[in-house]
Image 1 (cartoon, rainbow, N blue to C red):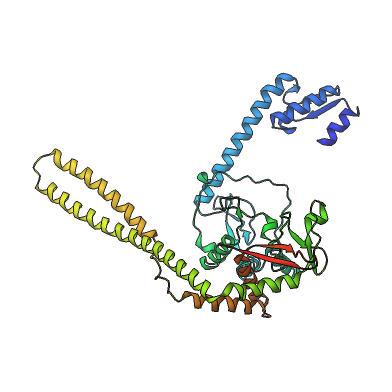
Image 2: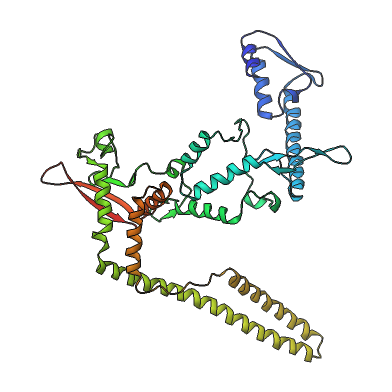
Length: 424
């Protein structure tokens, strides 16, 4: 079509022949634009159905073709809805599954049937297992490429647009499950754990791809310049420097620090200076009191719901006795309405209890000692050779630190103070 328009404007022909206007386009905007360009180039459009195309054809026939497209889309969605309600695929190729081609007894093709592709399904399971184990998406993709795992085929030509969630149709097809709930829930839990907080209100949002990448170094992205607030980044194989000073020149802080020295000082601070038994005991005592208060509130809500259900049962018994003893025709109807209202309230409390989690036992007051042991083991895990264990330990350590602020010493600019802000 683009070549046709270019050749027409170049004067290479004077006539465009087609079976009908809908062979050129069913989109009103496209057919109007094509007609306008042909008219400017003194090229006529002639079809077997309409003859020579005029403004009238473009207006009326273009509208009819557009309505045909909408009707076709509605019919397609109805067909997809019917297949989904039968537990079949609505269409398209999904990685991990094969399209099953078979004919119905009347000879018509049966659409929407799928079967599990064993090789692709194992790749899917491997991706989830590796992600739960702490590997980054980039590393997972690299390892799959190294072993020559078959990847999804995507031409990039199709543009899918999701319908509103209120219009979704969900049909359970347990026989087509690739993995169990435990693996799925573990992956979703890790996704929730690595979500970043955006804005001053601490709202969690969906991470951008670059924010999901595993930090290259232990404290990548956490080190800040005390003077401009800019990030400290690697300026050589071993040195960290203020990015603003080097890239924009608006900061005069040219003091560098070795990455290994920075990590050593921060880890030592976490292990020793911030592990003072007195301070941690005070923190843990306050933390224990607050957590126990919240858990007691949760326990009270559950007990209140249980008491309310018992009260409603007593009321229902009273109403039933009144109905049986009543001789008035109107009284039973009125009492039945009251019973229906009470049963509705009872159902609400029962749903609350079904979804409520039983509060765990109160925290032990000696939690401080346990916490110190856990942090010590976390540091030891960081030194181990097992890569998966090291990565998990690094993620946990990063979660403890909000920012690391670097300030040059006043006496000489070759060394720096390191201030650590911990996450609350």
